[in-house]
Image 1 (tube, rainbow, N blue to C red):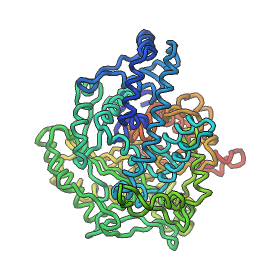
Image 2: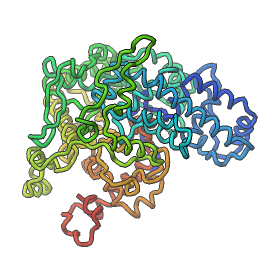
Image 3: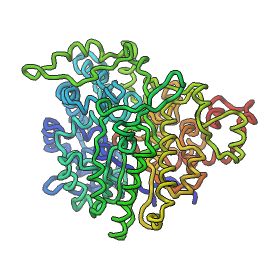
Length: 638
């Protein structure tokens, strides 16, 4: 069927608690901020503005979400997160003093949040082993330097445009960004919203309502029971159930599918091989939380519709232990689905990859700090912290200046400052084929010596492909062929989350095996899953326009179609065309509309534009039109 812009008939298939709401929602969870909001709600200007707005076409009347709570903060969330209430743009509300009071409140809220982040927020992260491991141990190590940028700004009384620069910096720190790994964004959000889980979940529901998300697929295990009451009070309230159907998947960490004996299989860069290699690491180096037994016993619960494996894809799935676990999970889910006569989903985050950062380029001697959490001394002080700040947490001073400047940019997409390890010609030559061996494309690729790896591409692409290979092998050889799973397709469906780097050959296997996919375009760019490789944001089809959501970049379908090579160039490393052309069933998602600044509006137009370009320009060798093509067109076509 013809693709059209809009959401009718499509589901947001990919949402994480903690990622749903806009970054400003995390700020709204602080106690001091709540007091400042109450001051706003008591002003005549605020009440007169809402009264005026309620009479303007496009206004959406907000309903209470949590029992016993009012709606003023929900209106404020919609205004600050999306700049509108329903489809009514806030700029059309002209009541005297309304805009000024809202902006003054927002400035105070952001000032309070910045002060908290560089003080208590930093302390709660850098003294926690789990948080510090996510930020530094397995992360990019760049969020602490970004907090130092924020601290310097807070103390700079002479900073020109301080309010807007601080706003952009907060957005960078509290969202997915090319300037830090996305797990660090989650940690920074958590140090704010853990102050009030009730408000945290409340704003997640309001975001789903504002974004038009009907079915919000929630990946949530029992690792954080403190949030359960807040989750129930928001998502399962009358307003929640009336407007958002929260479909809960029991979550486990993907590393449980990467076990090898007592170790976890992890990706590692090899200079000698010119690509990533697999290394077994022990629990002391990479602790893998194992809640799989609890998960297997939960599939019969009426509020559980499936399972999910999640986490940064730094691990490499194993066919033996990982395969055995997936078989057990599928068996348990099939039994529950038969018993309750319902359909369930095995959802696996796979094929997205996780960048292998080139720390030697970012940090002095390649050492990010602190690798171990700090221990408070008498009075709760952190004796080592001043020295760490003076050392810029190990970051090179030139990189620190660049990253600080980039984090204050207005655009959604920051210029790229985090170098990653890249495949060499030697490494690419050792990779498997991308196309079916006997297909025309396969024969051409073999003749040219081309594999599924391209020299210069980020090394994590092949980790993603290897994991897709492993899951397809397990599904095909260990599950579908077995008689006990004969009625599997009636009750249980496999769905891959992202599958960003799936090859044409893998896409064909997915179609054959009935594996579904959810595609999350905006997230894949913001997380560094796909490599944008543009000199500045001005040259990008995505991120060159001011705005807070992905949809701002793709709002104009005519503009996309007038310059199709730009959006094709942006997604040249993405599997979307392979999925569509192979007939794989797919959904569009956001990966969390808040943390990834995502919205599925516009993704339809992007796909339509790419298909139109493909039908016009391919498949045919790029050299056929090399003389008249621009450099971007050549790369887009490839």
